[in-house]
Structure formats: C-alpha cells, structure tokens
Image (cartoon, rainbow, N blue to C red; front, side, top):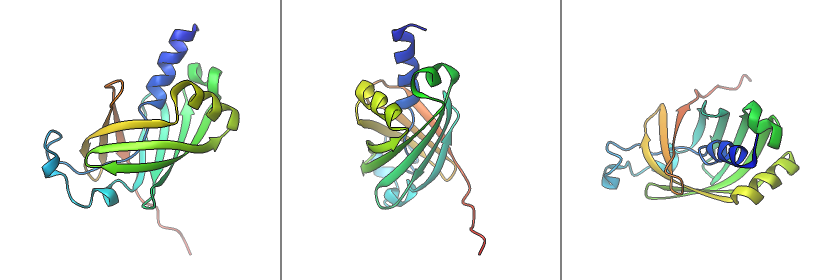
Length: 153
C-alpha cells in the first residue's frame, strides 16, 4: 500500500468519526435546532464506516472515541486506537480536540499526520441517528446511537 492510499484511508477513518449530535428538523435551518442540543449530543454513538468506531460523549465536554481500524489502516496505526477528546458545540458546528489516547505511538502518528482538532457541521440529529459533515473534506459520516445499559447494583 502506497503512502497516498494509506493517507486517504486514514482520513476517511479519522475525519469521520467523531462525536454526537443535535436534533434538527431541517439541516439547513439552524433556527429549527432544539435549544438543548448540548445535552442531545451526550451519549454513545457508533459508526460502521471504515471500521467500527464508538464515540461516548459526556456532558462535561469530554469524549472518548474507540476505533477498531480496518486491516489496511491497522498496518499503520494498530488494530485499535482510543482517543480522549474535548468537544465544543457552537450552533451546528461541532469541534473536537484530541487531548490524549492510546496506544501513545498510534495517537502520536495520527495527530502528527492529521492534527489535533477536527471540525464538523451537524446535518441531522435524532434519538437514534447523528449525521455530521467534515468541514475540511466535505465527507459525511453517519452515527447510530447505542442504547443506555443500566448498571446492576
């Protein structure tokens, strides 16, 4: 696999991941976005695009993205990578910043290649679906919410 193919593959993995959503009746009408969107973005979301990605977004502005990479990307970055993120939401603009992760070597390689900050425009959010568009590449990523599992006491 050449460098360009590997870079394209990883950009499809990394630049489509992250985060969670906002309920909008019409993606082109920010005025129709529900006022409690910061709370709506909180939860666990999963994407099957380019491997399996699970994003858990918390109300304190932190998130964790666990990625099980495709075999081609795994050659460069390892089979699994976990990123610790900080997120902010301004209207329908979601920004995520990588603050830590593991394995350290994989995170370092990813952030050196693609940077620490990713920006998305939220196109749709419902109770079960989040759709975001990467503001740099224009690529769209679909996320499905995972049900909340109650802890057994």
